[in-house]
Amino acid sequence: MKQTDFAKTLTRYLADFLPGQRNVSPHTIASYRDTFKQFLLFMQEKQQIRPEKISFATVTAPSIKDFLQWLETSRQVCISTRNQRLAAIHSFFRFAQTENPEILFESQKILGIPFKKKHQPTIPHLTLDQLACLFEQPDTSTKRGRRDLAIMVILYDAGARVQELIDLKVCDVRLAQPATITLNGKGNKKRNVPMMAKTRNLLEGYMAENHLLDKGRQQSPLFYNSRYQPFTRPGIAYILGKYLKQAKHSQKEMVFPDQLHPHMLRHSKALHLLESGVNLIYIRDLLGHVSVTTTEIYLKFDTELKRKALEAAYPQVTSPDTPAWEENTDILQWLQNLCRP
Image 1: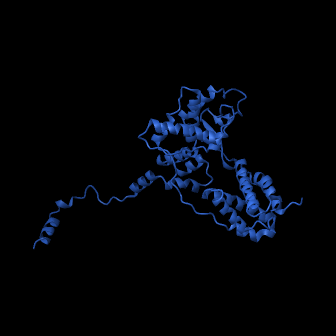
Image 2 (image 1 turned 30 degrees about the horizontal axis):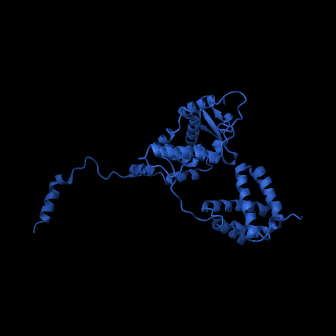
Image 3 (image 1 turned 180 degrees about the vertical axis):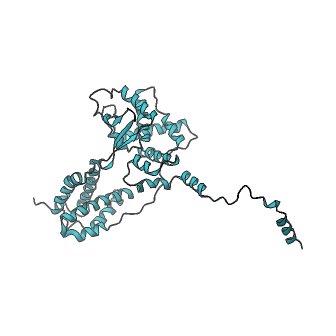
């Protein structure tokens, strides 16, 4: 079977360019791969073109627009997912136009397809009181409860993404002072996050109890399930959901969010640091953002920070030394004369 130009370029893009030249993480490659799996399915179902017959002559800007519309209508994806798929397509065609200059004009039209605007929701997060109540829920008299508490505390204190937590190994933890955790973030970028004393003591107790401080355990996952395998995203989400339900039951007067996603603990950490007056640059480094522009999104939703800023900038119109107007006899006399018939 004759290979098409599209098939050869897509193979080089996923197998060579992304891991070899861009050095992106396996999770990013998997996300881009899923985009094109869905695109191939769309071309087969809606365009009646089998995957092995797809060429750049059939992949045009109108077909990409139809694909994006198909994602939203048939697959019921949200705008964020739709934009994520388009970002993967844009990345591919930036690569493809250098490999195949004859498609340069069509690539420019595809690269010109805009991202869809979406409403920016309020950042979901927990208050300090809600967070304290959540941390009180695990039964620390049991081994599983102590493990679950350590998971939640690390997610919050390190500002970790859920995949960063799942990927943690014993060797990534430094208990000696200064205690740190090494997180492997997006694009295989590593960052060292300092641990607070209470977090360090909690983690040391968990590791000692599970024999993770023994020799030969350096490459073992830090957190694992009952089958001694690293947690999955649904597994972490289940733990958080279980304790959120308990917190709602124990503190009925406290208003909790309907759901608790792992990323909400990361958002909570960022907002709590802002409220404490921590410089945005330090928060950027803690969260592992490439640019401080990404971190600035938290400024839009920190109402307490805005209130304090407004108070600091509010001009002092009057001073304590200014006498009350009632004590000015000239003004009083003038007013009395004004009101006389």
